[in-house]
Structures are given as structure tokens and as C-alpha cells.
Length: 486
Image (tube, rainbow, N blue to C red; front, side, top):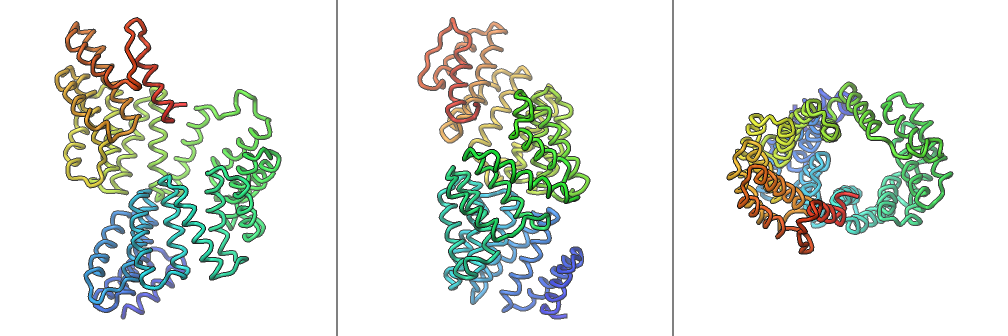
């Protein structure tokens, strides 16, 4: 069979929902295009389709490897097909967007857009869709003004191509309206969301976008003081949720609780969900995904992190450790072992074991971090600082105060390029070491730690030795100023 025949067969299988057959046929389509040195565009389409199917089953690392292999081949080809290269760059951006590596996604989407513009595709629908993806990455990176500019360009291009009343515009209108809501420009957001709602027609369960528009518009009305209008929209969404048997029970419960809260039917002391209720909802969601959507590894990983954090807050360390290990397994599957996210998951495992005073297990995980950190691309200074602080804590719990103190001093230079939250963690570690030295009667060492702590306190605060709370008060002040604690 020729690559054209494999392409047709793959597309037909995908259209019929035969995902496994489609993946096999896309692989054959891809292999056949490699035999034709001039088939740049077909090869790009083949690997793009294959990568999308791999991503659906969370095989992100395999998709990434195949895309980079093709990218290298197409960039070295002569003559070079910029549109084909742009297709691969966009596909890589898609993988990183799904994997929530938003900075990488933005880089590859930007490179794809530059090549597409050079190829004369400025006014195409494909360029509009590419800009929309870039905008989503910028939103997740917190670059909201840049995202707004990109979304307006996307909307303008789609209006020029499809007209101002085409249903295709609904998603772009929703994206921009939802962004303006986040930027607290509620009047502008209302106009765009109402327009999007008009284009999608009567909300229904077969159109998830329509329900997302209802929820976003309800939040806008709530912020504008129109509580009854917000409740009406959420109640409409709840009816649709209850009609759709595929909606997970916890989603219905969350929406019901939100409506009851807005109606004032919930007691005042329950205006906010209690921590126990939040934990129960997260557990329900975790169990639902595990049973019905086990390939949703990204969300399972997020839930594992959140559940472990909440369980540790309740001192349920054994239960938390189970979720930490699941998080690590999912991280390795999603990102590979030699990846910054794996280092961060290992750090969480170290922390959990330190909380349980399992120093042997914590030390083993720390050694794994040290083994991969130096040649792991993407490790930030704060990642290193966190590792050094874990090593310091492990050392002082093991009774090796010399090593503990050394790791603290190694951490100091990294503070300039780390967050205030990291500084807070370092101050807490110094304070713990100072107390341990005092308990052991090591006055000189305790004094050294006290002087270091004083030099790092915010706003040049002086330590009043008669006030035992001065350190925590100053550290909490930093935390509040930077939005780390309320």
C-alpha cells in the first residue's frame, strides 16, 4: 500500500472511532512517508495524527520522541518545507499544553506561528487556531495582557474567514470573555459571553462548551452583584448535568453545593466547604477517574498531589504516602525519569518520608534526586534550593549537624533567584537547627544560626529576644505580602 492509501484508511478508522486500528494505520502511514524523501507535508500530517492518538492514551514521551525525530529530519531536508515544520512544531506545542508544560508549549507555538506567517498563511484558519493555542499557554503562564492580544487577533481572523455570526466563533468568544472575567472586566466579559451563548444556541449536554459558557457567565453576574441571575444560570447547568449520565457524581455535588451557597440555604458556618468536604469530593473524583477514565493521567496526578497534601495536613502520613507514590509513578509515565517534574515528585516523597521519620527511605529518594539533577534540563534554582533544604532537614534529623549547617549555607546564594516562599522555608530550617543546637547545649552553633537568621529576616527586622514570636511574625509578614498565606 502507498502512503496515500494508509492515510485514507487511518482517517476512516479514526472517524469510525476505531482508535487502536487508527493508531496502527497512522504508524504505517508515517513509515511509508519516510520512504519518500519529498513527502514532507504528508510526513508531518502522519506524525501529527499519530502524536494526537498517543496523547489520548497519555503516551506523551513517545509522542514527543517521534515528533522530535521528524522535526530534525524536516529541518535538515532540502528544500525545507516551512509549513511541514510548522505542523510538527504545533504538534509539539499540543503535547506540552496537554502535559501542562506551558512555557514549552508557548515556545513551540510561537515558532510555529513565525514559520506559518513566512509561508503566507497569516489569514488562514490554521493560523487563527494556532494563535488561540498560544493564547491559552500565555494565560496559564499568567501573561494575561499578551493572551488578550492574541485572542483578539484570533477572533478577528475567524470573523474575516467565517463571518461574525458563524458558530465557529463561539469558542474564541468564550475564551476571550472568560479571560476578561479573570481580569475583572466584567461588563466586557458579559457582552462576549452572551454573544458566545447566542452562537451555540440552546445549551445541551452534547455541547460541553455551552455549559462552560453558562458557568462563566454565572460567575460574571455574581461578581456584578446579580446573584439571582447567577443562580438561574447555574441551575440550568445543573439540570443539564443531571440529564447527562456520563457526568461524574462529584461534579453534580459540587455544582449543587455552589447553588445552595448562593441561595443562602446553606448555614453561615458552611458558606465555604469544610476541608473534610473538599477531601471527600477529591477522593470521589479520584475514584471516578481511576474507574472510568484511567488514561487521564494528568488529572490523576493533580489529584494525587492535592490528596497527599490534605492528608499530610491531617497527619495521615501513611495514606498520604500512598498518593505520593502514585504521583511519582504517573510522573515517570508522563514525563520520563530524567525530567524536572520527576525531581519535584521525588522531593515530595522525601518530604513525606521525613514527616514519618523514615530517614532511610528519605535518603534513598534524595540520592535519586542527586543522581539525575545535574544533567536534567530545566532544573530551576528553586528546585536546587528545595533539594538542599531537604538534605539539610535529613541531616539534622539524622544528627549530622555539620552537614545540615553546610547545606543551609549552600542554599544562601540561591535565594536571589528563588521565591519568597523558598526564603520562608530556609528561615524555618535555620530556626529548627538553632533550636536543636540550643537543646544540645551548643551555644556557639546556635548563635551562628541566630545571626544568619537575623541577616535574612525581611525589612531589616531586629530580633527582640524577649519576644519568642518575632521570627514567625516576620516570616508570616513576608508570606502575606507575597500572597503565600492570607
